[in-house]
Amino acid sequence: MDKEINHEHIFFKSGDITLEGVLSYPQKSSLCPGVIICHPHPLYGGDMNNNVVMGVKGVLQEEGFVILRFNFRGVNLSEGRYDEGKGEVDDVIAAVNFLSSHATVDRDRLFLVGYSFGAWVGLHAVLKTNALRAVAGIVPPCGVYDFNFLHDSTLPILLVGGDQDTFCNKKELEIVFDKISSLKKKVILPQADHFFSGREGEVGEEVKRFFSRCL
View 1 (cartoon, rainbow, N blue to C red):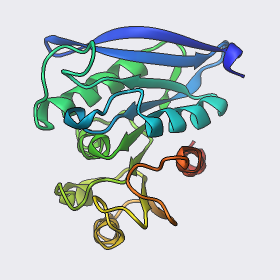
View 2: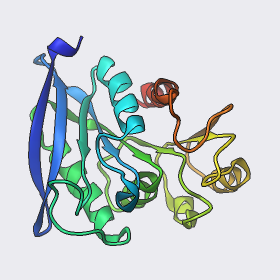
View 3: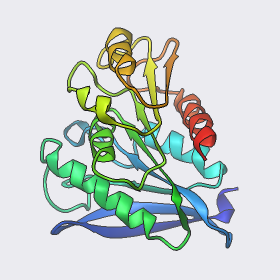
View 4: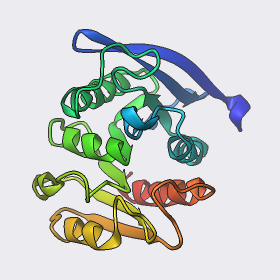
């Protein structure tokens, strides 16, 4: 199916800086649902080509989603520098705005996926935009960052964890999950750690199933 997909290397603005991304979209005329995928921590090698980002992309691409993956500020060809999450939230909002205005996207069916650090900043951004239909947080690092802000979210939220994860252990994830008042789902993959090596497709399938319920 990949030959039916356009992959476009793009750049878009986040405030005064320019960010690098890749837009993947089906070669068909009808409007498609769109999804932004946020990568893990920039200071620890995270970028838009991360294995989990690419695994989720592959599954959602087969489902006909228009997909925007991008590099946070300071990563590869994206301008600026790491901003401890504050500027990165702005980057997510800029990505949402960019994708919602793309000619191939049904702006009423816009979703977001964040992995690890990308889940923290991506879920923060959810509270600052009304453009999204639902959001997925993959192994949000509950043991590192505060996720109490999720209590205020009204969006459907999927949280995906692994039972061998040391950055997002099952107990911490359940505490965060229990305080979410909106439509929600939690999935803990057995024998999976924070990096999901070889399990990327399973993560993507969980995201696909949840988003399909919200379409």
